[in-house]
Length: 157
Image 1 (tube, rainbow, N blue to C red):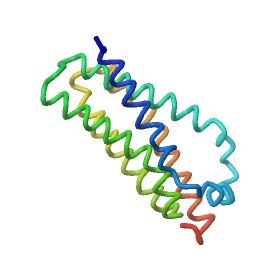
Image 2 (image 1 turned 180 degrees about the vertical axis):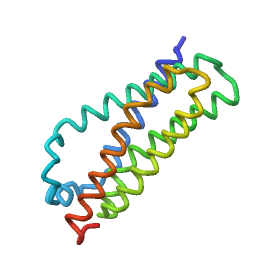
Image 3 (image 1 turned 90 degrees about the vertical axis):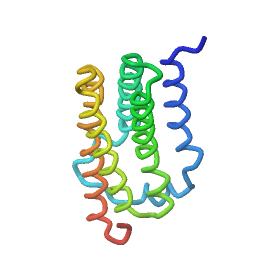
Image 4 (image 1 turned 60 degrees about the horizontal axis):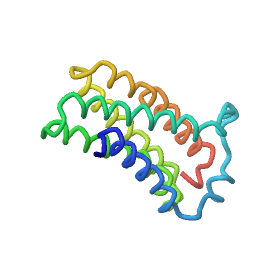
């Protein structure tokens, strides 16, 4: 029998790597953009997002196990999936459009979705809400960084 944590993990993994499959080959455009001087941690951003996705999947697992197979729980799983899709869409959409503003909008939208999910799961499980804290802390940093890059590179905003 497949366990709920396996299904959540597989979906998280597949959606996460789907972004790599649909990302256009415009990464050279992004690499040539100027960065803010304080952006010294760019090399660890993939690790940060990996931790955030693991925490998000764990949060979803807690919510699923609280009341499995109910309409409300399925709706919550849909919201978690929506959050991951928006998060993964950041790179392919920004690269396709060659627009840092598009990346900023997607990043801000992801933050709002995560905030809504956190508020929804808080009455169900404090742990599920706390596991979303890394996203709530990091997403504004990433969004602000993209916005700052649009100011430094106005031709690519």
